Length: 295
Image 1 (cartoon, rainbow, N blue to C red):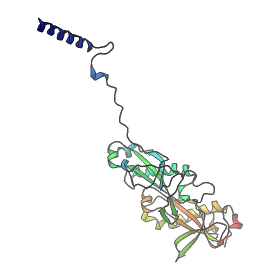
Image 2 (cartoon, rainbow, N blue to C red):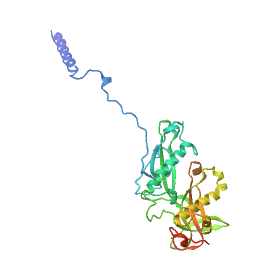
Image 3 (tube, one colour):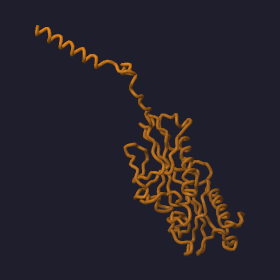
Image 4 (cartoon, rainbow, N blue to C red):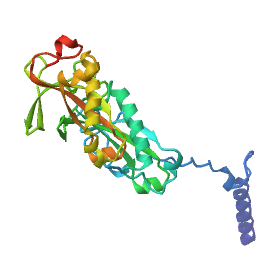
């Protein structure tokens, strides 16, 4: 009798437990269809306006450590663009000199010029385009960074550590803007350009950026006269003097063309400078024929 009652008790307990596992109202008992859908994976894209302590040739995610632009840094990402069309269909990031690279560089030029307030080539700045790594590209990344550095001088592209954003850097009385210089010239070759106030004795003044002809880099020497003529036209506009045959007797020209790699990537911005055969003690901007006479 005792064993029978035990069996009944166990059975009753089991019945209660099974009842507790019954399906509540509103639940269908199918575990598979009650999971929340997973979000679609997103590709990493760097941020515009971020600053970095070191420049990069490739935008590796492992090396992405942005810092506050108010702290010391060496590079600022001014703009982030996206490649589309044929360039985006390549199996690897655009190579130097390719159509994709030229497209990215042209967008960087445009956006950076807007950000700094003038052509970035008119000041102590250097622009580079940075693409994602091969692995990120294979994973679908198609972004490019427009990275800007402050550099030492017009003839020294060493990067200068700085604090503060470069936005608006070429406006007002910024010390980054190219103005007046005293050149060191040896046998008609400019060796260096020392910055000097335009109110002090000087021989050289920056007048603007000329877009050089679209020729191969090794053809620059054959186009030097054409480039000098382009710079003379900038002098005429800058100084408010006639752009005619007398201009070559008012002032000479010095120009700095882009490095070979920049040239191959589509950079045709040539920095143009007025050179005087006498000491000047003020800017010739808007000086007119009396301020820049035929000599």
